[in-house]
Image 1 (cartoon, rainbow, N blue to C red):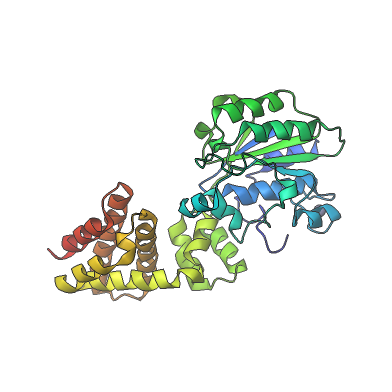
Image 2 (spheres, rainbow, N blue to C red):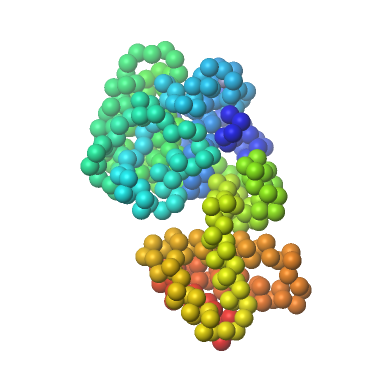
Length: 348
Ligand SMILES: [Zn+2]
């Protein structure tokens, strides 16, 4: 599994000791609920699934070489996915951390082939992405077929199970077929219905250390400096750090540097003109303006090392103003208003 994420190296030592011991004793939980910051849990669930299917795992780590590990990359016949289904149109609207994005993300394994996915909903499904009962019922049928080998069911977005889907899933969890392990993921235990939660073993994913995130980014061919900057901003979330350091973000970085440049000077006409003409600040989708400001904060953090001591105070005030504008936009202020307010706060 060389080119995908493994749990090794990204969690503090001992974080998964309980599960490793359970695995060694043949008592790996029938249902595990992994809670992790948005978007960070799926690679770990995938890694665990591979470890459970692997013929020669070391602890929870898959060997990466055996036939089952090799099959895993293209969709393993004993790995089932229980996924919310969204239309293509909806997928485009989902915020970047939505499920569709995560599955397309380069650091998860290949998309499961249709044969390995449990159909949920189908064409014309309600695009608010509750999992459909039909999907869970289909799963029960598949799992009921007698099989001795271990089977894994991935439910990476368990917080999106609606009441009906949860009830259908609960029926399976109450009398799980032997050899079946459910690996569920959610941002926090509170987001999962109590009935599901109480049937699951809880495991929290501790944020990675700065050094671990940097090391991870370096394996993704991110330069040392960019890795350091992105890790600073991502607060222990490797996937987020990877996004911050992506070459695809270069145009956004350029725009972020323009914003910082405007903040440095008291040229109101130029600054307000830039804000009014900025396409990403006019979009109804707030994500574009948030990304611009988040990127500006990464840029500001990286500028600290190269800024003259007498200018550090101004840099800090720009950081505060940018931070405030980001908060305002998150709390539904119009991006242009928030940015104008931030600039005026610096120069009024
Ligand atoms: Zn293996």
